[in-house]
Length: 477
Image 1 (cartoon, rainbow, N blue to C red):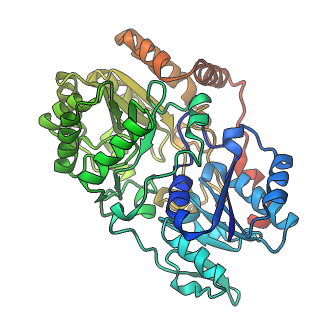
Image 2 (image 1 turned 90 degrees about the vertical axis):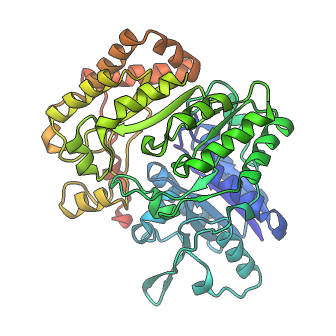
């Protein structure tokens, strides 16, 4: 089979690479299928002329598109273009949006199949069955398809043995090209992302992680993990590795042993980051010291809010009173502490925002991120808002990087979010002058200017929302 994998335009290249497609490629390498990638985001434009030439020269049997909610509109444009050019080409979609919102996604008439969950094995099974002309659709885990006018969804099968996977093919996704275009993700310079664990046991209503990877946290073996590190260090020349797991420290002993083994390697110049954050409840002083010794410089933690009431609304089970002590413990180990916060959650009030401001000052974080809450399709909070008529069932998020909002709660209609964000960053720079150095080291000048000007424009009401939810094609509504 000739298979074209497509990464839509709109993924933020400074913080995301198509790692999922790199996994697909490496784990399909032995099947005999010919796999090629067309990456709109790396090109930084939506060029269908170039895409047309790609399709006409390759003539794929199958086109697979990955999508987040933020790139879904472009993903369905890609599907329509493929079917218009070649109606017989089989189309399939995967990714977070498709996995958590399959019914609405399958409203797209140009989409033949959808794969939910982890696709490294199931996509290969799907292709093999197509090639053999023996597709027993009900036997493919996570497959969604139409049958007799109704949707059929087969159960997702999560990988029990993560070590059965091959390392992602970084060359296939042109990781070096991403780095040249500013891929950092809270890291200085050239770095590579890895995943050592999958799954999330928590029930935060704004997040889709457990819906995609399940609630059980699964880990690679320590041996596999260390060999991956050595591969990136010795064979690919990387000196910074970002572990982009959601729950790297959930199994504390796994995290500690990983750090001990890294320390024992004595790899000069190697550093690590966990930019998706760690749950501080699953940490202790020994782990912080080991992470410092293994090459961590900064730890990201995500209280999300300084209001316990808001956390209860989010169903984020966290005791805020424990956070300041944990921040001091992190800093005492020689690490910097980065706090991640989200504002504008349904039911949040001005008083809750003020509590967040006070909490940030109380914790004395070394650096902060403040982002706008945006409901993601398929998450519990999205479903609740849609059912109550507070958002359209076609709502898609705005740009996180540029500080746009797709949703504002009634309780904060008159609140100037951008002014608050600008103020908080200025206060952070006054409290921690080296915060400015951190910003300059971890973001390109272009990224900094985009964020600054977009937020300042919104402070004064100059910038307008693109109202993406109202641009959803009528046939998808």
